[in-house]
Image (cartoon, rainbow, N blue to C red; front, side, top):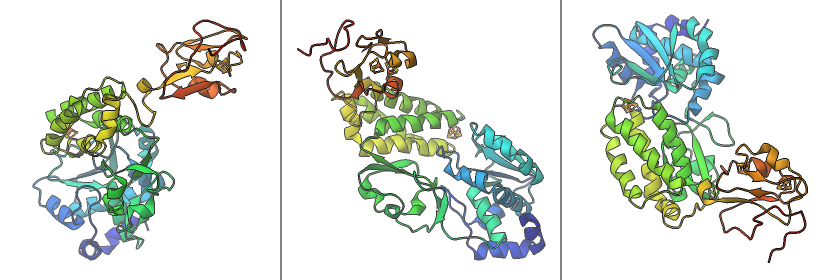
Length: 394
Ligand code: SF4
Ligand code: SF4
Ligand code: SF4
């Protein structure tokens, strides 16, 4: 028998009892006893719907691995939730960009009468229905199958998604040695703060350690960019706030940052948490607020000292060809997408820094390791084509 058949065979009342006895709780940002959510939805007048998905704000999406690895469990859990609420229809929401996963799930979803949608959940429209995290759906199916394990799902850079005890210290899950920051649950923490956190604090299931080689500002730009794409634009504070936050951090990475950006980030980010409808607006500012609040010195280094401490932001680094090492082999000119390397066979090659996009392709192509990326000063370089071996430093 399938998981759903087992649930139906058990019957409504014993199933409710089983869920309550297991204290099954909604996953993610809005933890609440699952049965309380189900009872509230069944009190709705008219048709009830089940909307399953990640928290809207979850741009890391590591918990989608549950759908990749055990789609039957998640889909069965959604079907069981539909049975408990008497739902007229059940939907599984997947991020827009997950078209491939959506296609992979299509036939299984149809077998479970679950409709797939590539969007975020419209929380206002669904507020009287059952919004269900996919990890809760998975837990529900595991409970029916007698396979429910305690704990929360965690994925790190070197470990796949797996359940660990909710009380596991973060320091036992990732190495904090050499850490500059720890990113989990929608914000950055200092290593000292992370040392006090537990697995249950990683509400997206993802823990990432940032070291001196990672630029906090550049990483914040990436995350805000994903949030901005995710925003449906209904709330002004989310729509405009994310555009402004991303713009300011981008300007900082492009060496065009202004001192006022730190305060402005706080001014824009703070009200987003309260003036928006769903977790995208409520949580996305946290990354920028924690970045400027805890790692303000990194922003100041970009803005005031014209330096990216991690040497990541292209606007602050130089790429040059070491005239003593270049053999004039021409390999680099072939790979440069900006066509900005001047040279010919047997001559020392030169990069036009003005046109260079700092993509790094030439560095990979140069077997002589003659192409150097540095956040420091440029050495003396040729200003015209010179034969290999003829360049004089002084
Ligand atoms: S916070 Fe508002 S604008 Fe942003 S995604 Fe949610 S509903 Fe849409
Ligand atoms: S920089 Fe490297 S790849 Fe380019 S010509 Fe010189 S040796 Fe060859
Ligand atoms: S970093 Fe990229 S754009 Fe710049 S010279 Fe090398 S290949 Fe060309």
